[in-house]
Length: 346
Image 1 (cartoon, rainbow, N blue to C red):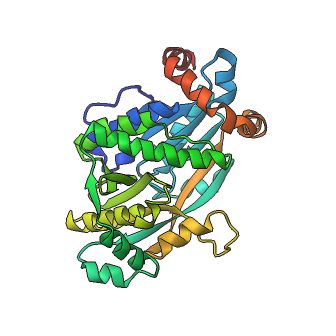
Image 2 (image 1 turned 90 degrees about the horizontal axis):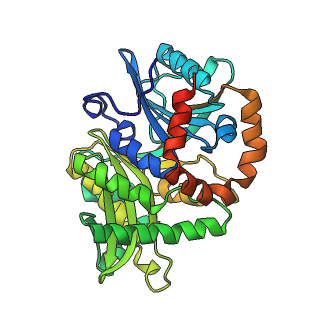
């Protein structure tokens, strides 16, 4: 099984999943991933390799994120075997943005089943009134507040709008870092996705403004069947937050999915928790109040090298939030060394 740096001819035309596309692979480079494409008659996958691109550290830190289209068991067995030979210690297979259609690998040795969740709203054929009726307060009330504040939501078309979007994301990232959580979405990621995915209809970006002031920005993945929320940011200005820019952007996106004949609006990752003390409760409760349904999205973690995976857990993770910005700088300037290391791998 061959992992190629360049996508095979016609790759994007053979997948309906934006998260497997060449554009998403290109954007992933900006967060330190090394994309590889693999395909055979059974299935196809985008493999995102990541490790510290230094001679010894590469072998001990190498991990992989895999987005496989159908999850064919034979294809996955061959792919995992190939990744083991490359020296990959741990593989994460799919996530809440695209779950595993086939969970046969859950029964395999060294595989940990992962049960993720997402809120989905059936958008097709529903009127504004029907969508609003399914919601719980304060969502409808905040939609009306945004309308009274003359919040306008538009698709981002220009580099200027993109800069306003990334400024909002950076502001949100600063708040995340203040809670000692690393930000993994630099401005370069969104710029690459905007330039490579939006022209191909694989992604869209929204920006909510009031009187010309940016309030919130959101990125979505687009397929024929689903509009999926990927990431966003918002202002925390006390003068602007009462205008509910994020709510206005979600409301625009929900109706956009319906108007374009996209059957499902995917709110993205959520938690089934009902514990108000849980860190995931607030965001998940916000999504629940839009009237969707919580669905299980299967994925998996696979350990290919217990020794090196244990090293990554015990030594790498505790320092990740501190070294992550440095890691990104190294990866942006050391692509050649990492590529050479992969070439030399068996």
